[in-house]
Image (cartoon, rainbow, N blue to C red; front, side):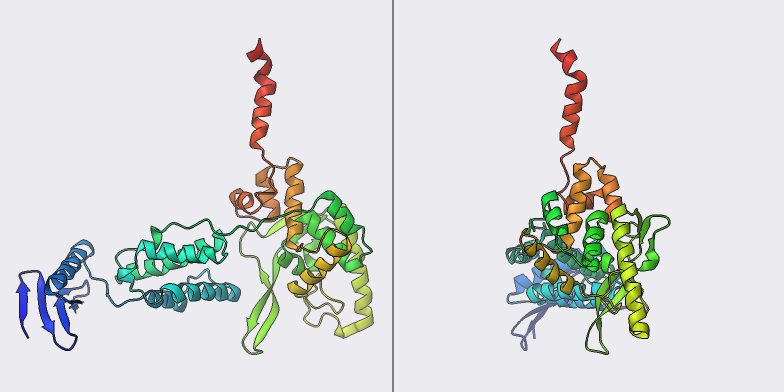
Length: 390
């Protein structure tokens, strides 16, 4: 086996077992451990070139990242040691789904050889499948975080995910009901539960999960307010092998909010509470077995599945003659639209719907937010118009 060395440049030799040249340098890491990273190439010249890359990396960072580390490795490490804020089981499920999409496309690629172009092509392919811009940003964020962890541990020297641009992605056309739509819906012969649900959704802007997770203790009729504190979620139950409905605390301070209760909301909720009191007397101990005391439970006081509510809501919309292509969440869009058209400030709308800031509100409800910029021109014309024309 022939072997050639360069002073301070490492060693290159022919590896008969691999059928190619192998290069190696030697250095000591911060802990005093000796490291001997290797590279391989078909020609001796190419092997020396790869060694030069290792030496340049060593000079720049003080270490050499492993060449066999794959994207699947760094994503797997991130899932095995998730950030502390990934508390919710539902969040972990979503992150695992995102990880599966990343590793399915890039898993075998070596982190050291991953390029910006590869990441961007992956995101473009995902966009072509109809993924939203927000989902694409989350995919890039996860890949970037995983590689950043590898950088921290000296296993990567360049985070190409930070340089990749996110394509536009698909955008779902958000909609809100017109006043005629609302009148048609409320003009139906609705039972007490549905009238209270629809009126509360339209007039408070609560999310579907917040509505179904609303407890009677959060409804203060004396103060005339609703305190939004919980959300109903469907989480996996490993013991039962299926999902179960769980009340969870809201994630952010802005989500945990107190809102004034419109008179019509109070009236419909009082009627619902009266009906539930009668059901409780009738069923006795069989009513509300879990002791959740939720407002929008079923006739036995148990929480309702969102998909069941969504399915029947479509039927009601069809009966009202406004089409069945509506979802309960679009009542929230209607709430925002009414506030915006009435001149309510965007920051106050953001507070009402529990967004972390008004930028989220503008992005999510861009079709519902009235264009207030034009109002400035109207004011300027009114104030200065006469002076400029004289």
